[in-house]
Amino acid sequence: MKNGIVFNIQKFSLNDGPGIRTTVFLKGCPLRCIWCHNPESNEFKREMMYASSKCRNCGKCAVACSFGAHTFEDGKHIFDRSKCTLCGKCQDNCFYDVLEIAGKEMSVDEVTCEVMKDKAFYETSNGGVTISGGEPMSQFEFSLSLMRAFKENGLHTAMETCGYAKEEHFRQIAPYTDLFLYDYKLTDAKKHKECTGVDNELILSNLKMLDSMGKSIILRCPIIPTINDTEEHFEGIAKIANELKNILEINIEPYHPLGSGKAENLGREYALASLSFPNDETVRQWIDAVCSKTEKIVKKA
Image (cartoon, rainbow, N blue to C red; front, side, top):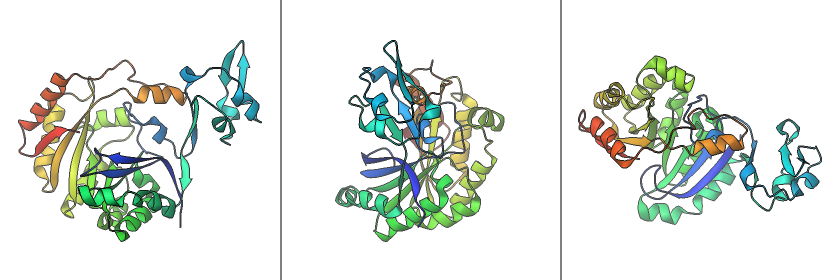
C-alpha cells in the first residue's frame, strides 16, 4: 500500500471538526497562498527547518554532519541547505531544538495505529479524525487509503481541503468522508490567482458537486486584512452559502502571522510579514458583515 508524507499528527484538536479529534497533516499543496500559516506543508518532500534564533553555537551539528552543511564562522552558525541530505544526524545531536525535519514517510497502518490510540476520546465527544495539509487531495491515493481505513475502524472522518483537485478524485473519496471543511479564499477569480497561484473555477465546481452529492460542508473563510476583507468578498461568501443546500455553517478564520517564523526557518520570504493579528472588534465586524447576508451559522473558527 502506498506510503505518504506526514508532517504532523495533532492530538486533541478542537478546531478541525466536531468533538475531540486527531488531525493528520500531509505535505504538499498545489496552491501558494501568500498568507499560508503552514509553509512547511507546501512542498511534496521532507525539508529541514532551522530556527537560527534558538542556536547557541554549540557546534554539535557540525560534528555530526558528514556533508559540511553546518559550519561556524566567527562564532556564527552557517547552514548550507544545498549540502543537507536530510539524514537527521544534526537534528538528533541538537540540544536546543534548532533543527527539525518537516515531513516523515508513513504507511496507512502506521497513521491509523496512531490515530486509534485516542478512539475513546472520539467516542465520548462525538469526535473523530481529520486529514489536512497542505492539501490532502494532492496525496490522493494515500488519503483515500487513510479514509477507508478510518471508516473501517468506525471513525467519523473529515477533510480540510482547498478544493483544487480532480473532480473524479473527490467523487471517489466522498463516500468515506463524513464532513468537508472547504476553503473559500477569494471571490474575485483574478485576485484568487494572484494570491494563491490558481484561479477558483475548479474549486467552485468541486464545491457545488460535493453539495449536489449531499455531503456535509463547513465553509472555511480565511480573512486577510488588505487582501479580502471587503464587502464584495463578504457578499460572495454569503451568496455561495445561500446557493448550496448542505453548508452547515461558515467559519471565519482571522489572519495570523504565525507562518512568518516558519517561512524564515525554511529559508523563505514571507510576503505578509508586516501584517499583525486583527483585533476582536475587527473580527466581530467581519462576522457581522457575513451574518447580515445569510441565515447560515457564521462564527469564528
